[in-house]
Length: 292
Image (cartoon, rainbow, N blue to C red):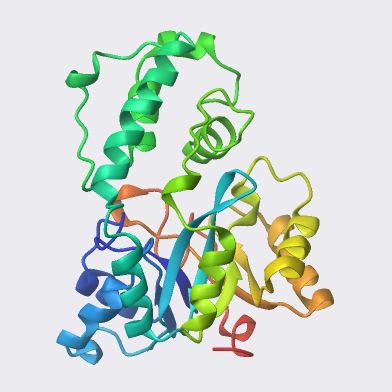
């Protein structure tokens, strides 16, 4: 069993490096990748511990890079790259774009957009928010959701889940809460280029969570034609069996490598478990043995 999409306290997960390794061992995972957002600090930190004391399986270097594409944000996953080269790039690129600075800015912007469309929120100074550890959109989503009077002001699916709120209403240019964040992140070409320069493989993660993508197959083929993609994340906690099977067949037909992971964040996504996602993910080794 594998999990190649996980997060620690080095980005927006709640588990320390050792906690994650121990959980992976208890689950008898054979392959694990820590894919923290926009950094590979967990992989650097592994050099200071005896990893085998906590996890006996194989660890694949990983990173999830948020990037700009067609005026919106998507993510790409990098695997098996040179960790030192990637660390150098992330340190240099994000030196003036810390998570704390960006989230503090987005918190104010999103708060104002929510108020502008008539949603009810406490005064901004009365909302507890730590930009070092939290996402502005998550905090505001939960705050909005806690007030029943907001439900009649928005479409029926607005509060269905955070991904719908984030990707459809905040992340789509046509969404009422859209914020243009593209200047704060590398372009998709820059992200893919740096993964390549570091000797890594490029995968497209959780393609179905982007609500603005109308044709998943065309989306993947277009990115591959423009920038060359190695593989697709076929297994993810938000995918049902139909989506998973479609992506598996798509990869087979189009010669893409396959990957998969829970997108585990610990307590920050309490409904998603390491290895099994929402309960039944459990990805077999056979899907990744071609490249791992």
